[in-house]
Length: 195
Image (cartoon, rainbow, N blue to C red; front, side, top):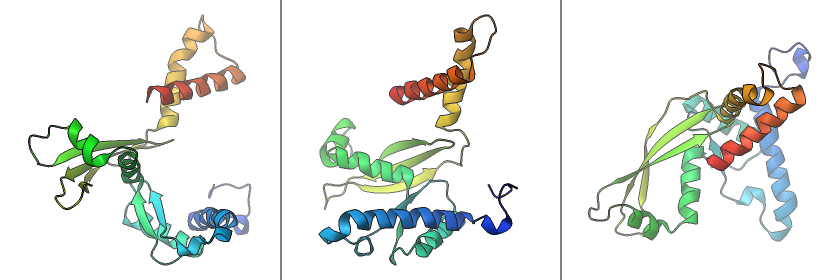
């Protein structure tokens, strides 16, 4: 952490540098696995996903980190909820299944709400879909994104664990440290299965 006294000022790195180190590691890992097969990282179209709540400044810093990591020119950013929605569409027959599930009496726009519950934050993105006469894939446009909500999966895990602890400890007692960590992990599993 930037305010930590455990490291000297010279040992600390900026968030951009930390991001660049991670991105450079991913670039190297890709090349070690796929370059011999003719798929060099720098020859690919690169898209980096970012939280929907990233403002223009945070997006510029992400691009700066990608440049520092040696990514090729033309890196695109894609918001995580939009990437998740595209992934969902790819896994389903978007041209048929999506439109058949909705009322197909009217060719007007449809809307999809994508909820991205991360470890410490949640984002909500609303997409508008319109039938495209020239393509089986609907036109997709993001029409709204929520404010950055500082409530995420880790908070949900802890809330469930705090709710359950008195029932498990009995008589107003507390769980041991190991029991608490096991309970939190079990609550995470429960949440993931429920969602």
